[in-house]
Length: 242
Length: 242
DNA sequence: CAGATTTGGCCCGTAATTGGTTCAAGTTCA
DNA sequence: TGAACTTGAACCAATTACGGGCCAAATCTG
Image 1 (spheres, rainbow over the protein chains, first blue to last red):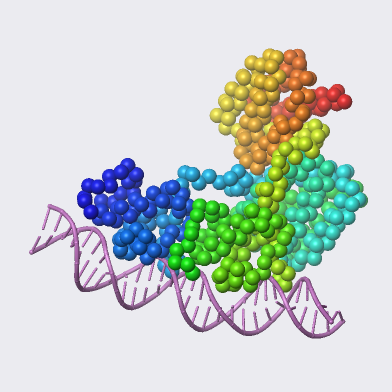
Image 2 (cartoon, rainbow over the protein chains, first blue to last red; image 1 turned 90 degrees about the horizontal axis):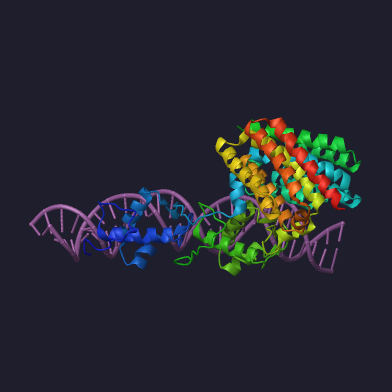
């Protein structure tokens, strides 16, 4: 191959101590990565596949991959493959996952602290007897859990959602739904599970039971008090993580 | 396994340190779920069926299902099956307009009454000097309006949005954004305009000015007091409509 | 109710794939 | 000629995929 061919402007990843063919392979692969043909996180074809596709020897492909790896564009793992680590500009997360990523556990607790007491207040007033019956069913499921933190979180979510819908205020319910989603899609659920010991599950079950009793007897202030207590409990847990 | 696996850019559910074949199965199943081939709540084929249909080993299917379950897209129950928990976008189209239609002006005011005082409180504490400068600019625009109610509403919205973002809590800001949207898409803005006489605009401008002064001087309690006063003002107006 | 069936949960050994390494020979060009 | 680059091949170690078997839970069936 001629020494001075291929001097395109896209030659961002350059290395003066490599051969011409290697540089061509580098440019070709990097162009594919930039164009999202191989998006971040994906595994690119095996070295043997690439060598046959590009019509070059496997060692040449390897030299090119060496450069790309040294530039932190890919990461290789023996037996597994070569994975793209390059973040393209076009990689823009959708609004919901973006929200989830930008929302810290503290942000989440703050919003819950604002919404939940008023939510409970409205729910106590506006829930129908049927709503309360359904909430009772959910509580039964919640109390059936002993160790499986995943099951517990699911039931907990249903419990809160029922209360949110029980307010009769769809806008408020949607706001709370936003908070749930922002929390679900993050690492927080994983963090939570670690701290959701059977003992703590039992504590929460007691608290939710008390909350339900206050709701079903239409005792607004007591219900609000219980939800605030529970929020404080969660704040403690968050601080303990540090 | 196939010699070279197709790796299109539609790889939404990504997981590093996952094998190539497993990733293909993940993409395939998630695509079916998104396309409503397996709607929410349905049971997808058994692992053994899937493995024979997709031509991969059952363990590979299981690895893929593990990822989907960890992403809260499916839920598995031993002896029962794997169930879709993912809520497809197509399943709830116009969720925003539907929300707007179901949200009454009273609902809207209730939510604002819950969010805005705490929002202002956080904003006073967390806004940067730059934020306050920009809020000042918006206020200037707001005070320039004399009769055009449409211009006034736009500036008003920008004013509130700036405060919401000034809290530094993206989740809280998103909740408020939801409230703004729910209000914008309804008849309410039309109703509002009828009552937005030049005289009333002037009253509001005075109130917003006072609110801004409290914010810029970091006077938390005064700022909260002003926003509450303004909310009461709006409540009055709503009641006058009958 | 009791047994059979289906389903997910789990384990292990084997085979295939993949990157890691080395070496020798061919090619290009100064 | 000599130095550089490329090629082809072989072998190794890590990882993954496969196939099968067995279990427990849930469901179906008689």
